[in-house]
Length: 254
Image (tube, rainbow, N blue to C red; front, top):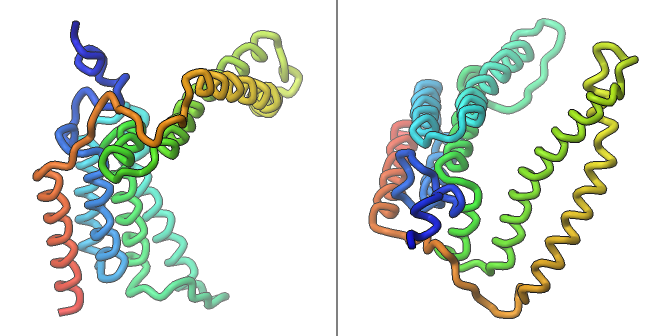
């Protein structure tokens, strides 16, 4: 009988493909930390653009779902563009003189925020949320109760999004908010909040009963279906990130 992870990788929290599948789920997030510090302390506009481009390509290589891919890839660039417009407006306005934060130039400040955001999103897109939460217990040896709470929160979000869509669809079929014209979707959205809260409380009670029936928390440790190991390749990726961060800081302060 094949293992569950061999027939359905998504059920075990591992991606079906992607360039970062052979790595530990926490590797890219940990590797991004020194780069964030280097970009925040010594990044120039050119370096920031290189980091943003590399992080965007990394998100594409991770092969997340299509909607998540588009949002994750565009968010740093849109944020940098909005900040660039804002900084230019406040810096060049003849009517006001407000110093938001000392940066070398508006482009440098905007791209710094965009580069840091791109690295954060890359760490999140490199592996599924369930795999990253599970790695906290298998790799960092955190209590599995914390990981179980995180896994439950992720599953709750997915379940509630489906329930919320069903509630809005049912209210649309019943004609709720039809008298509000173009504001009908917003009316149905607001009217579905209270039923969604009732559903969430009911679901939380069922989860609590299920965990209690399985004696959750009776032992200090538990056996995971997938053992997220920290290998030599993970050390190599983190070492390369540290080297890149050192190069950025040396180039800035030489």
